[in-house]
Length: 174
Image (cartoon, rainbow, N blue to C red):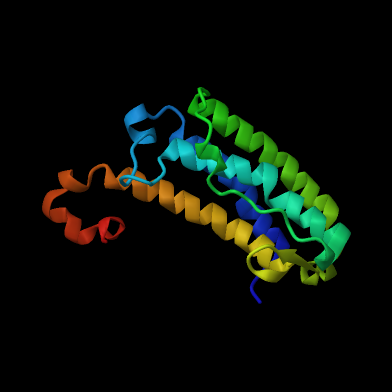
């Protein structure tokens, strides 16, 4: 197994700052572009990450630690952020994400007294029995997936403009 709590926290702690540095101050044309119908723009990805912080990672971890497999996790609606149109600026969304992520890292550190907790199991509504180690690994890879998605969506905006160099731009390969 490759999972290491300290290394996982390194990524989880850096995601908000990475996004803030990369996205703050960009024009709406960067933030609102997408890859076509049914895909998310940068702002929607940030809202999704925020919803996960509120309703997914730590709440499910707490269920595992308190209830084990006896209580199935409540379903997480991965698309709930699309139901409400937010008038908040991207900077406000990033600050909210950073704030709740900081709180969640503090909770995560407080919840783990030993490596033993990584093998505890819970009951996922779709996957059945899952381990804490798997869930925490997924949280890290989820961050990395959405960082990659943001970069890919932004690159897509210039697909038609790169001309023959598209051959060398792996991010634009279908």
